[in-house]
Every structure is written in structure tokens, then in C-alpha cells.
Length: 230
Image (tube, rainbow, N blue to C red):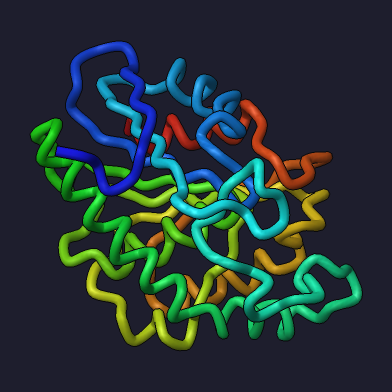
């Protein structure tokens, strides 16, 4: 049976007891985040790590991929402009709620598929994402019928917040990681993401990293591994 998404699969040291879904970002691919995947793999214990491949060519760069379009609601890419207010940035991603909801439905089906393949339940499943992947991870985990073990968002923002708050059906633990020099998914948005999580009475912790732009570093993967291994 063909998978819903093409994917790459890696095993950590130890027995396979936990499933980790690692979602790449916009203008990305599994290969583009392999550096971080390998850092994480080295630090995980008793995990199977699955990296799904987005199905669409990126509107910005046909050599890479996207899960959904950002240009649809933000053709001028104002969310990256440092002069754009936090409120406007959240409004841009809020208007993409329907698109994120659709991707989340498919990602939940992909999780089901991988759980059946490896005989692992929701209580031992984690979802992790970078950038657009982090947004999908957040939306997917909150709209999943059964509570996942945890969700890790790296350099993300809450998407479709007005729609999402009415669709929350489970509340896993969250770990939010963000670089202080990020001007793509701007670091200045992080406090508002954390406030939204708190308003929904979600359990979370967050860590911020000096001199880190819109990418992942090994220290972030260490925090993610500690969260998953605990």
C-alpha cells in the first residue's frame, strides 16, 4: 500500500517504542532538514523517526516543496517585513486557517498510517515541525481525536488561530523553540504564540536561542530529544 506522503524513515538507538513525525518547512524537503534530523536521531532513544515529503512544488522555488501556499494570502510576503506589525502577521496566518485545517486532516491520516505500520499508539507518538512544518504540527496535534504524547514547534507561529481555537479536541504537551535572529517567521511573534497557547490552557515550555536565524541548531535538537525521551 502506498503511503499518503512519500517519506524517509530512520531508527534511533534502542528498541522501537515511540514514533516521531518530523515535518519540513516551506521551500523545503526532507533532504533540506536532514542535518537536523540526524542530530535528533543521534539523541533519541527507542524511536522511529519519519520525515514526510510535501506533495506540492514550492511557488517560490520549483526545486523545493511546500505544504500550502503563503502567497495566497500574502503575495507581498509582508509577514517577513520587519516593519509589519505582530497583529498583521497573525492576521495573515489567521486567514490561512482553512488551508492549514486541510493539511492537518491529511497529516492526521498519515500519522494513523504510520502508527499502524509500526504498532505504536498516540500516547507514544510525537509530532515535530520546522517553520511551515511547525505550524502544521501545532494544528494537527490540537485537532487530533486522541492526545499525542507531545508537539514540538521550531520557528513557527499559531496558524488559523480563530478557527483553530474552536477545533481543539486534544491537548498534548508543547515545546516551542525559536531563534532570536529569526526574521522569516519573526522572533517578535513568539510571545503572542505563547499567550495564545496559555489562553487555550495548554501545557507548554519554550526556549529561545541567541544568534540563531531561521534554521535549526543542535541545541534545539537536544531540547527536542530531551522532551521526547522523557
